[in-house]
Amino acid sequence: MFQDYFGIAEDPFAITPDPKYLFLSERHRNGFAHLLYGVTQGGGFVQLTGEVGTGKTLLCRKLLAQLPRAVDVAFVFNPRLSPLELVATICDELRVLYPLGCSSIKEIVDFLNAYLLESHSQGRRTVVIIDEAQNLSFESLEQIRLLTNLETSSEKLLQIILVGQPELRSLLNRPELRQLAQRVTARYHLTPLSRSETRAYILHRLKVAGLERPLFTEGAIRRVYKLSGGIPRLINILCSRGMLAAYGKRKGQVSRSMLSQVARELRGEDGLASRFPSWGWMVAGVSATLLVLALLPQVDLFQLFAEPNHEGQLVEEQQSQQVQQPQEIQQPQQPQQPKPVQASQPVQDTQQTSEVNKQPAALPAAGAIIEQAVATEPDRSGMAVPDVLSPEALKAADQASTSIAMTAQDEIREQESSARTDAKSSELSGLIGNENSAFSTLFSYWQVVYPTGGKQRSSCDKAEEVGLSCLFGRGSWKTLEYYNRPAILELMMAQGERYHVVLTGMGDQSVTLDMNGRKFSFDYAEMDRLWTGSYIILWRPPSLAKTRLQLGQSGSDVGWLISTLDKIEGVESAYDLTNPRFDQLLHLRVMRFQRENGLSADGIVGKQTLIQLKGMVTDRTRPALLKSGG
Image 1 (cartoon, rainbow, N blue to C red):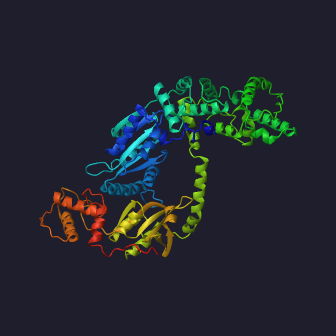
Image 2 (cartoon, rainbow, N blue to C red):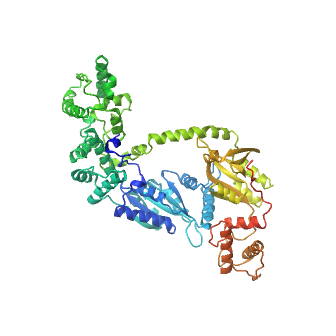
């Protein structure tokens, strides 16, 4: 509400973690470097800790905004999960498909392992970031440690970054977690800002918001540092409220005295709680006030609430009330009737009161009682007013502060988007079957019958029984066009339900889906709102002893690779038929084939490369996508 007054587009001290406002002090720069190390280096654990409000989550947001293109990240915000739920959450974040309703950790980990191996073969890295990690249970921490056992012969497949409060350090020092603690390869603890950094922090956020002139006096900045102790979130709360105070008094700068008053209000020292021992007296006072207003025909109620130009009189009236009010409630048996409010002294502007009430743990201004009564707030008579300037109280206010993260415009956009997709998703959900029906349909395109027995076996286990193999992935329509074969797509409906359909065709404007034997065409724009990006394709793997071929290996598997490349290239290589070796020359041939087919040219023959090799030579009978899309 004060943005227009100061000539800025947004509140520069909002407590939501916006990466563009990140101030890289020396300690935050070191913390960010540790996060980058965790993303780009080998597997294991990286530990980032810090007191509440020091900027840990903001650093993570900044990291997500600057990720290398070859890194996939799973960000777990709520770690209060069972081991099974935690592994499933990681798979969901990475868009790894697993059987619906699966209750076996081993089965889900097997799907995750297959995904990690495939990503590694493409030269990609996978990182899991767990925020608020101090809330992890012992069982979940042990399961996370076991996930780091997923590895190749040379490196780990998963890098895990634990971000949390100082309690995380104590947790990992427990004897029963010593195995996990030994795998932590980098640790860093964020500390509060210094006095000079606090000043630079305030000026930085004002500059990012577009305000170049000095808005805070030097005395105010010193006061902010003393009150906040250099904790960025507390600095934001104080500065935002200070700007609101300057706006209310129509001042061009935030002074030291304004910050002192703000601090007293945040602590509750000068708030309504000291003047009203219970909400019962507040309601009685409000009722009496409304009764008096109703009996005054000469008072224009609209002007009373909407008059915008009497802030100075309002401040004087509030100060007068602060002196007189305690005397009025010393004898609660005979409460005095409130004085009628005159039209020349309007109640504080509704928007300003609403903005103040959004601040966590803040008490309402003296002129905002009527608005609070109309808003029918819940009974808080048993709640103590916390000292939000202390880290302990800030922990308790964390959950409440996150409710400010979405603005009204964001909510409107979300509602409109949900309304657009709801009709389409409702139509689809009535046509789509379960996972088994999707696999049964996909099997029919390979001219094999889907086994219906064995409920304990996954669909991919059944595929292996008929000589097929599943490839899980996530990507775009270009990815599916590249593979050029029917695929199972995961769709998410408006209410969060997940379904699987079979993609059978792709055209210029639409795609074709097979749902329980019935084909439907949908525009790409419609599908983009429903498709999560996850897919499953089937392929016929060659009869090899190993699933990965690479430099230094030898044997019949390598002989098959040489023979297949010879057929593709139209040449006949001379090699030792008794013990063919994967030498440097074969390594270069594999890299050339990978480059020509749009694969990561690492010289390692994994699933992606095997699929292309089989498709070009020995798998010409495989089904392909319809090019017409209809």
